[in-house]
Image (cartoon, rainbow, N blue to C red; front, side, top):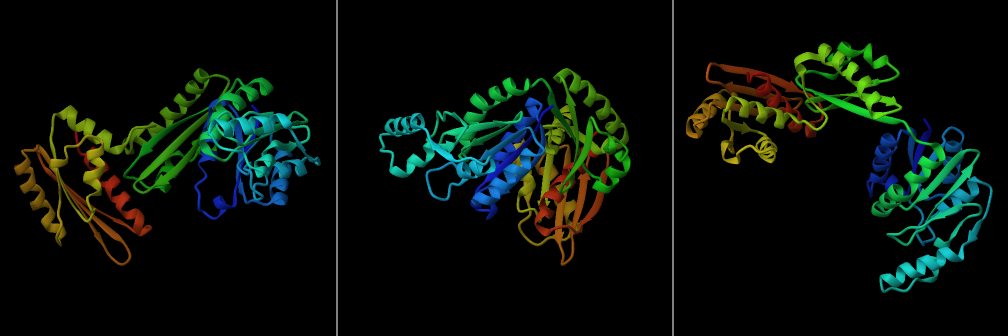
Amino acid sequence: MPVGEIIAIGTELLLGEVQDTNTVYIARRFRDAGIDLYRTMIVGDNVDRIAQAIREALSRSDIIITTGGLGPTIDDPTRLAVAHAFGTELEFRPELWDQIQTRFQRFHRQATENNRRQAYIPSGATPIENEVGTAPAFYIQNNHRIIISLPGVPREMEHILHHKVLPLLNEQFNLKGIIKAYVLHAAGVGESQVDEWIGELETQSNPTVGLSCKPGQIDIRVTAKASSEQEADEMIAGTVTKVRNLVGVAIFGSNQETLELVVLDRLRLQNWRLSLTEYGFDGAMVEKLSKAGFPAELGHTIPHDCQPEELQYKAQSFREEDKAEIALAAGLFSGPDQQDLYLYLITPDSIVETNRSYGGPPKSGGMWAVNTALDFVRRNIP
């Protein structure tokens, strides 16, 4: 299985002015093609630093993709940096200049003299036609390793990667493997507790098991490298079964499943209507459930000051008004050091209540509270 790296180029990325979505896109395509991604990095518009990053990548990886820095301006340095990394010079390619001018003519525009810079590529490089933009891409092979320089414009990069680069890599490296991931979602439990339960699985080499923490939710990722999708699925299935047995009821779904969808599906199975009363959420819970298909008219936001003990009575009143089988009252109260969540669930048979506290970043408290409240409902629906 070949090893790959991605180098995103652009000072605007380092300054946080533009988000690097190209790396995410390429990483997913690498995974699907069975290319083991070793490292990603962002380098500013500096020829020497880019050249050094390329040399380092070539020392350890088979496939290096660069994105960005192929424009017509002086601060587009990728072509020169790649040439320096290989100890060569830039050379003018008339056929590329013809392509660039033709592209501009299609747009009813005139190519300017600085666009000629885009027709210069490192000596020994093979050009890759950009069918959806004006910046030609190119690649260079060296000792069974390849560096491919793609435009930074996402639409152009994606088109060239899909139509030109992946077929090229398949031909050069006979790509047969696959890297496949399966994600289990857990809630109502902390990351350290999940780690304690499945720590031994996290030491596996293939498939690997890793954790990703979000406010009120823990994702458990199982990733397998295999020669075929069927083999990867079989490898993943065994580990997923072990994870489910160890983590138990805290797991609410997998992959694209969300807490709100799981909760609404359980309500539909019981043929129940849920009346929701929230305080301190700024409508976030009603909005999240509504996007998943929850009737917005069954969601009630208390706009004025409210005390925790009032929530249950408010929910009971709205439940009767909505003619709902169950009602949830959720109140989020913010203090100087923590946020306190009070939950009441009124079912046909009982009233269940609990309260939780959150001391993490205040801006994440809302998401934590929504996920915690939804998991509370999930665990108390038959």
